[in-house]
Amino acid sequence: MNNKEITIIMGSQSDMPIMSDAAKVIDDFGLSYEMNIVSAHRTPEHMFSYASSAYEKGFKIIIAGAGGAAHLPGMVASLSTLPVIGVPLRSKNSLDGWDSILSILQMPTGIPVATVALNQAKNAALLAIRILAISNTKLAEQMQKFMAKQRDEVLEKSKSISKNTENNVY
Picture: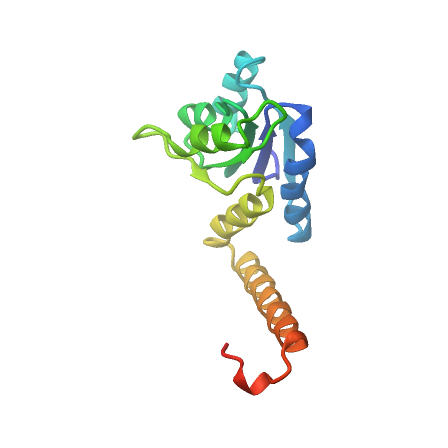
């Protein structure tokens, strides 16, 4: 067992710039995570072993990013009882990201994968944190503060561009 509740996996090193955004969000919430390259196509045995043992290792959520054919999130979901959050990635060989979006989004019945927007590893991390916050009051409070900060930033920006704040509708 480990003390890391979230694992972040990706198909290749080239996915790191986007997937590291998830790690930054998780860091901001003070959680620990594990990050690995687990290719569904180039290391299928490793993927099978990693996904099959994720629960026993103590993980609670898997964030899986993949581009192109993007089989990683779905294959991992087929091997693990843990929630899987898929991050479709625009890769250099991508069809503008649509191939990975559809590969992750169009899962068959019985193999659910929560899917966030293209290249939105940050949202994957925030969704993972919200899931964990269901049973963690401290984390729920942190999420409430995060959401309030976002709201306040938007309202402040709105005020700064508005000449007449009396007409603003919030």
